[in-house]
Length: 445
Image 1: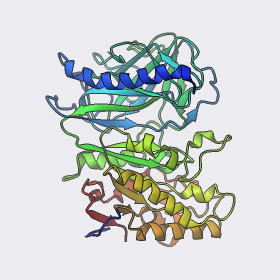
Image 2: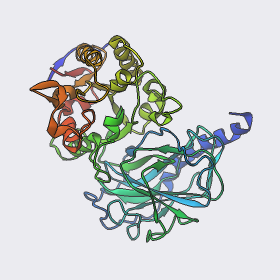
Image 3: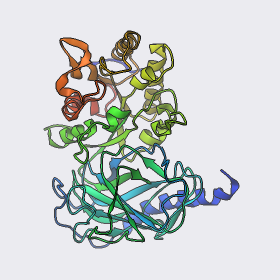
Image 4: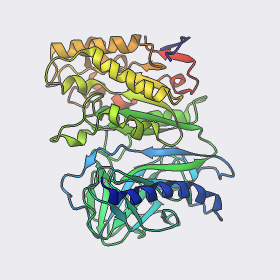
């Protein structure tokens, strides 16, 4: 890929009080950070790549995120008298943290009676590292009620958070809370325990394993070392549905590694807003609700409102071809991508779009769908609406059979990459694409 100068074209009244309260909680939680006292520096734990530098000044930036996809189908009443310990993985470090909790797909107010944050004692383990357990508050209160469709951010807690580390975000609800907002394909084991065990550190009560993330949708850190965030909005390829469980080998994870380690790379975190089965244009059906709202519907929530976002990478479009009941005009898909780009650019954000990856050999591959993919890619490469293009198609295709993915990169289903393919995708990103200066366009050739 080469760089060159190119112009860029330019639910009820009863919930109203709760919604207002939730907004106040977010504002208060930001202000409370100023009142922090002493600082505790925990030992290195859970495979983290190092401790963050103490912060005397700095900024908030997202270190981890996920996109809420739907309500958990097997828990219509919630998880009463249950502690839910989500394990999430940081992309950058900091000296304090705060947590976002969501009731986006809830059908009633959700009361979190108790929530905590800690470093995991070992990778993917439910035990907390010694000295790192922190009780979370919301506007100084331990309990918070989130209205349906709402999100709250905790008050900040002093905690040295390493990059590349597992965090434990635990919530406890005493009573039935209704539909549970979740992300189904976490590729990470989380845990449940009976009773209020949110502050327990040894993890022995957490005997029920789960492949989901529940309620938690983001973690921010206070940092002097990270300037902003890259948000990747995508489908199952970004979600990493075929990556090794518990290993953090999705392609955005590999991109975060590059940004941390390569000389001259922008000092940005990477936030993953992928939803498996997601489409640009159409919401998930009732049968496949976990495919989430369309990217056009969720762009604001899952990308543009993320803390510290500077650049948005869009990896979407293949499901608009695969799931469409008949022929689809490629121009419609690209127009949808351009609408997404315009949303972000109107906020001054840089937008990078990826080409659609090969899938010949997959059960849904047809000559007509292949032709549509090729035409979408041609339009993406040529479009003036994007600040940059990353050619995932070129990175993954077999030179001897360009309609197919290289065997070494394929997970085995001829559609999704495996770990090696995800690494190749991250390697295909010219890091100049991440720079916040929108005056330079980096394109695929």
